[in-house]
Length: 602
Image (tube, rainbow, N blue to C red; front, side, top):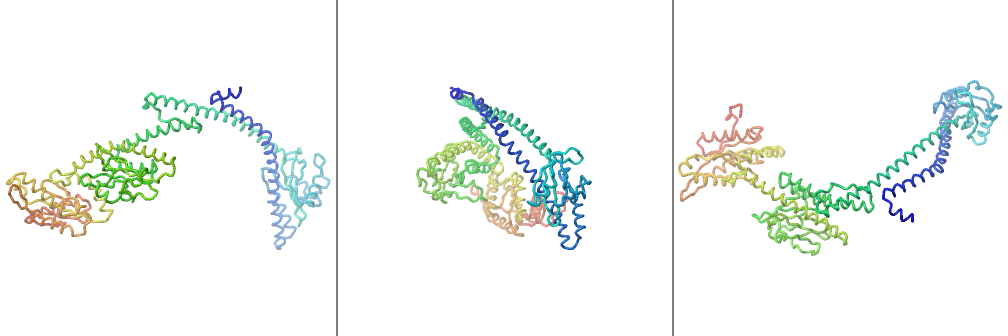
């Protein structure tokens, strides 16, 4: 009957009852077993402490005996000095040493100096005990030992129980001793009993308080889990509390943990989407998504591709170039996107069920791959390639499939952000390009100047600057019309672009002016490239409506940081050299020299 009733008790009552039983058992065992054991160990410890200090003081006698043997001191002087130094020793506030000989004559007593030189054979303590005879008897029989008697404390008159340790120094026939008063031990034991009682009270109170805390920690999350499940069942999951506090590992705790994992997954997904929404560029989003695969989902590898529809390529966007990681895809897929099965079908492709489902995948023996398409507006804009070890059993397979399903959810949530970032990036890039020539515009130069300069300084290289201006361009517009002028600008831009490397920067600086930034050039190489541009433009013909037109171009050159410490100064110097080329007859390349600039300000 009692057992049945106990089953129906609230959890808090069950915990409290167990705590009360535990505290009671602890008190009984402490009082009946641990306290007597501790008291015995304390008494033994005090005795061993006396023995240790006597042994330490005994080394002084041995030291002076060696002095006698080595002839440094006479026997009389050594004995007198040894007795003096031992008489000065104190420990535990009022504890001291004394010395008597085998004839029971007091050699030295630092407190009762009236005993010095007296024969203590018939000296009795307050109980009539001939204690000095016991000192001699123990010393002769065992060499050392403990003796109990009564003796007054220093400064006191009433004898109290005392236990001393004495040891015979054979060469001189001296007995060295010291002791501790038993009432000091009793006082320490009383303090121990008091501390134990206080500790027991605190333990009992703390145990009951902890039981209350644990009981509340179980029932409170249980109620919150039930409330949360009611909200989910009612379709009101948005009202869920952030977390269910679970401090137990029983069924209630596991229920709370699973509920928390569910909520953590939902919240983490929401936070992840918010984080990537706040990123500035697509590479940063791809970096976040790639790190998520390896760090959060703990897969072996993550490779992200972006589909370039125009070039029919698969561009690697994660990991970054400085982090080498095999993509698992054959090179033909990267060069020709149509060979990618995910790109072609828009479906997840994995070797979990069919080992050779993708002929262009080389995951390796024992390795699995899971390729997730990034579908935007009905088309595949990218692929997430996940690598992992193939599972060995059904349980591992289920866990792996769960993680992959969660990852797909993250990828789907990322797609809307990636699509909007692509649109913004396209708009941003269009704002940095000249719509007529397709070259970078002056805004691009203003935005990226710091990065260009930082790269040059880090590499310790020069940049060549060419300021190019089409000669007599205004005549083209006036005579042939603006449509012919636009053609000349576009064709000239194309010629300049063909004369420089892919890494070099060509900017339509304004009107018919073009700025070329040649990265990592050798000193003096700038003029040669400027001459190449000038000759190519001069050799070109512009045809529009059966009209053939030839134009020339003037070029001013400077080098950074050889000519100035800022890039904009060097741009100005190239412009100054351009005007000198115009003054000298046009259709020529002029290298800036310091005497060309006489101004103090730019």
